[in-house]
Length: 219
Image (tube, rainbow, N blue to C red):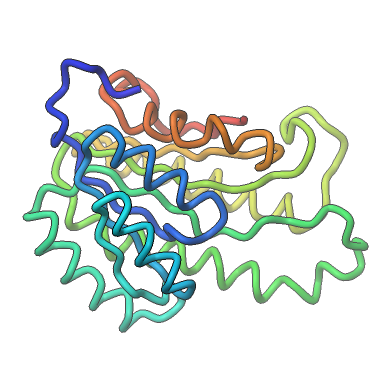
């Protein structure tokens, strides 16, 4: 968690997406500690406005699957954060349905890759706005069991987790000189993880987690 002794305005946080699954708890986790916070909303505009009114966070209309929209959003973020962005939270990846028959996953491959592309471009666009010592956290719902030790999962889960792991480890290595940490958070069961989600993400963004990078943390 953020240390009580830290300046309450020391964190400058961007969350994509703030109105997606778990997004509201992520926004509140940071604004409750006084962090300067902005979040993307692709739809659910009424919910986004209400969340902004209640928390003071800036909502930015942005379609993370559209590069022009993302680039426009980056200009807004840069001005709002005053070049002090230090935390990127990625809540874009889809939740996976393990009930779906294995033969149907091939139909969803294009959609899954589209989501991964959105994650990549979100990070590519926003990382230049970060200074040294920042933190990147990418969320993914992984299913109901320990993905490293369980029986083989669905093709989609394996594909997403392998791609996410590779992305995180590659980014962690490439950003080491800037002291930017990159970690992933795998949610075994989002409903059960929800009460602890905000606090866990806030911890990974804090100075207490300075030694943690290139990791996939399971909840």
